Image (cartoon, rainbow, N blue to C red; front, top):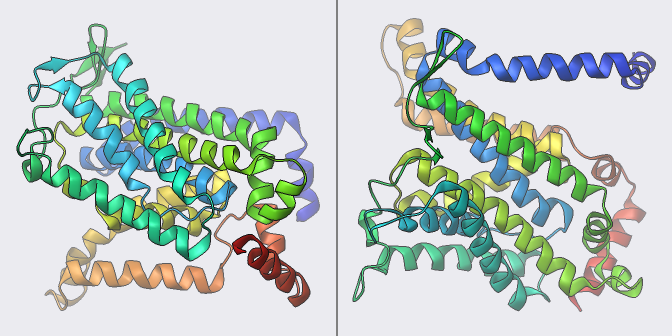
Length: 373
């Protein structure tokens, strides 16, 4: 079986056939989903792609560089609010989408550097606590920056945000091409898919680049990496900036797609769920991170049918579907972490780490102790 798999991997025709089949499936996915499950699920597909972009950004910080960030959703909020404030009646500004997206990514990257600079010497639990505080500070600021000067409109959020449009083409309107009707949620799907593929391409190039190897070296042993001549300060700041810029792009798309944002959309639970995506999928492995994002976005939505399932099986609802849904969701996460601690699709290096013997583990812990000193 393994030999056949290895042979298939090195067969160019089989690989290209798989890519073409995957491309056709992704192109037809909104239509298939709309026909079978309804348009509500196409909207869930749109959010899935947003979470894929978010998870890939956090994967740079946590998966590649090994910097545990629990406040990552703050950069998502920065990107969303930049878009909302510059493309809504709130300030009377209506900048175009093509200008807002890089502005949001750039400002989020600056916030990433501002977070990274004072935490350069922190690792593990200490870094997690500081980043968690940063995420909460951003949310509280957004919640209270409505007095004495109204900047964010406080808990009411920003409404009537301009939909995403490029030139005269609005992604929120229905378009017709070759006799096929493309509603707004379908065109948003293709836009998000294109940007997700772009971020996947950038992540792949970074993974195998000199910078990517430097991130992995810092993650494995920061002291050894510094001894080998790697500028750990700049490389860590670059990881924070790159990860934050991906979150800024996702946040801008979210604001344009939703048309309304408020601070409650960027709470701690969102940070935790994005972190769960990369841990569950396979930290440091792009395919695993994508799988984790897809599963953790779609699975909770699928569990919403649990009330109908109870009615079908027992003729009545035995347990509150909302409570039961979160219970099953949490139980599934715990079981996966017990039986697949390295994630569903771990990277080769991470799989070797989890399969290593006690002496290697002791060496890893010793290097972590050296880094903390």
